[in-house]
Structures are given as C-alpha cells and as structure tokens.
Image: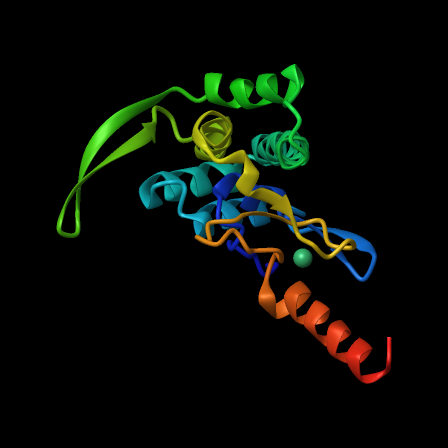
Length: 199
Ligand SMILES: [Zn+2]
C-alpha cells in the first residue's frame, strides 16, 4: 500500500495530492481499487461501519470496484482543475461544477445524530454504502471549499517541480510548501548551498 499523506489542510486537496511527481516521474497513489478504499479509510471521511460494508461489497465485485476507482480519478482530475483555477484567481468551469454535482447527485445521504465521545455529532450517512456514495464526502468538501472557503488560501507547493496543493490554514498565510520535510527542506538546503558557494 502506498504511503498516503493527509496534510493538504483540506480533504478535497488531499485527494488531488494522491497524484504526485517523484523525481520527474508522475506517480498515481490510487493505483488500484484496494488503494482507493485504503485512502478513503485513512481519510476518515467515511464512517467506519460504512467503510466496512463497502470493503466487503467491493472486494467481491471487480467491475464495481474498477468503476469506483475510475469515478474517483475523474473527480480527482476535476478537483485538480478546480485547485488550479482558484489558486490562480480564476473562476472554475461549468464542467468542474458538473463533475462535483454528479458525485453529489448519485450519492443520496441522510443526516443522522450519533453519540460521540463527550457528546453528540451530526453526520451524513450514505443511504447505500456503494458506488459513488463513498466519494460524496470528498465532493462535498470541494463544494464547500468553492462556496464557503477562502480561495486565496489555496495554492500550489512553491517547489516548481512539485504538483501538490495546500489549503494554507496558518494565521500568517505563510505556508508555501506541501511539507517542510520534503519540498520545504529541499528549498532550505538549496538556499544554504547558494549562500556557501557564492550563488
Ligand atoms: Zn511540494
């Protein structure tokens, strides 16, 4: 299983970031239906009981799990275009809205109140835990980002060879890197090298 990262600061961008570039080569972390289910599980976007039911259903059904992967990738592609547009201060196209709406429309959900540590929580539950219902929380996150989010906080990692996006939640709006460990660190090392070699 690939090492997923959930540090974009936004679920919709976490999905976008499952497409990466490693040493100039594009890498798709969602390379199988099993990887997609694992990503969904780790994202915490789907209730564990729904996740279990879905895993059971999809492990049995190759065609359905293949279709789900295809739907996830096409949602992801729409969300990458969305991130590109709003980080560039441009409106998103009708096709992007249609792609998000398609997932929302095919995923009827009901609102439920649940017991939670220390109180109660509202949660949208899929009416049937199959197909695109699993992707609905990601589509909803994207819709909320468009409607209610601060678009000026969406930006691409400052490393020009990196394709990851972040939602900058820092108060000072100074998050430039997908992660300090990778791209941020590389930039620091490059600056250090420049300073000490008269560049
Ligand atoms: Zn980066």
